[in-house]
Structure formats: structure tokens, C-alpha cells
Length: 309
Ligand SMILES: [Zn+2]
Ligand SMILES: [Zn+2]
Image 1 (spheres, rainbow, N blue to C red):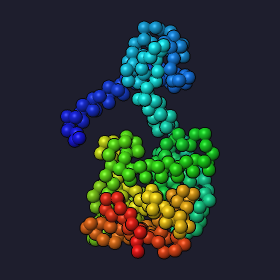
Image 2: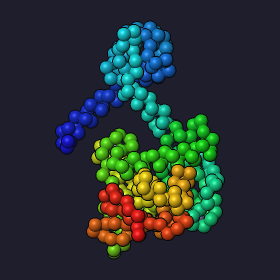
Image 3: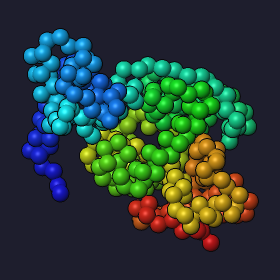
Image 4: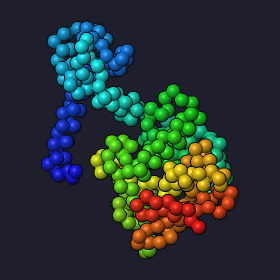
């Protein structure tokens, strides 16, 4: 299915009216009250009492606006629906209204460039940063929702950041947008022309120069065809999800699950990635921490990972 500009205009209008539906305090309070209720449902009078609305006409009006999509009328009351849950989930992620910061917290892992201890830091721009305070090495930087920090101590926050980043990266690399479920065609992107100039979309992004993988010769471009999600991932992420590959890594002494992303050399070290062939692009990813020489090749579509022999 290909969307035309008029399709997109219609989608924008429909989405706008859905957002407008939520533009009144009382409507969000209704969703919150149903979320708090056993079975996510309440009778009309329980719901009205829960939100503390005295004006019956006003309450009925606002409830009717949510009915049919965010809230369903059931036999003895009203029940929260999937879109209502998703609205609450988005609020609870904290990205719209929370401004928190953490650290710097010293980590157990050392900088792969100089050997000093790495630190985790989270700032109000919603980016988590694993850095070396000594040499300035950007080991890993990625957005993280404030919801990941609430109710966790520093160690648990760092572990959650590793898990969630891994989940987003591997989902995007498998062609599914981790945010809207839309389509993504991952593509190996040769970062630098032979004349040294950056190519394509990377060239247009000033901030890419500040990206943690900006020294990698090749990155994987992931750009959702439906929502605003786009990013560039280290090519080594492709080694994290194939059983044949993770099995070989295990044999070579690499614990891909127990080692945080920022300590997996084949993911974060620029020297691990070598362009083996251009047109079509193919890269070699060497597993620098393996107990034996081990490397894999990755094709341009990021579909095929084979052991390099
Ligand atoms: Zn360092
Ligand atoms: Zn998307």
C-alpha cells in the first residue's frame, strides 16, 4: 500500500481530531480512573465519582467524546480500550512532561580506548550518555525515556538502558519500527566517500558529527516509512540476533546478553568494522574480544551475516 499526499492529509486530520479528543483535563482523568479500576472498568456512577465531576451533563458530554475509541460502553459501565492504554503509556513514559537528570555514575566497565572507568549520565535532553571522563570517548549515546529512571536505583537504570536500547536497535534492524510498528528497510550506509565527504542523509545532519558512532566507516541507516523515527546503528548490532552467530560468539567466550552494549567491541569499536567491498557494499565485522580469531561479513541489506573464513 502506497500512501498518496491526500491519504497523508486525511491521516493528519484523523490524528488531529483524535488528539483534540484528549484536549480536556476531565477526559484524561476518565482514562486515568479506568486505568486504576479493577478490570479497567467502572460503572457510570463509579466513574463519575472517581473523577469528582459534579456536573452530570458535563461528565456525560466528555465521556461520550471518548466512547467508541478510547473507552467502550460495556454491559454495566465503561472499559478502557487499547488506544486508551496507549495514551496512558505515552504519558507514563515521561517524555512529554518530566525533566530528570542522573549522574554521572561510575560504571563497572572500562573505556575501551584508555582503560579508565566509564560513566553513565542522563540529562534533561532525554539522552543517556556512556562516556569516558578521562579521554572523552563516547562509548554509547541514545535517547531514553524518563520512565526508565523512576523507581530504579542507578545500577538498575543503567541495566534498563542497555536492555531497552538493545530491544529498539534489534527491532529496527529486523525491519519493524519499535515506536509505531511501521516498515523500516535497514540499509548499510557507507559513511564516507573516497574524497572524504559524508554522503546522503548523514551529510545533512549537523548533529551526526556528535553521534557516538561517528568514527565508524559504515553504519546501518534505519528510517521508518510511517513515523518520525530515524537513526544510524553500529553495523555490529546485526550480530546480536542470529542464533548461529550468537552461538559462535558464545563458543568464543563472548557473553552477548551479560555484556552491556558499550562493552561489546564488535558493536562500539570503529576498528571492528572494515569495508570489504563497495558496490554492492559488504563489510567485515571482527570480534576483537574473542578468544580465537573470529569475524563476520554483513551484506548491504543487513540480511545475511556469515562467518568470515
Ligand atoms: Zn577513555
Ligand atoms: Zn515508526
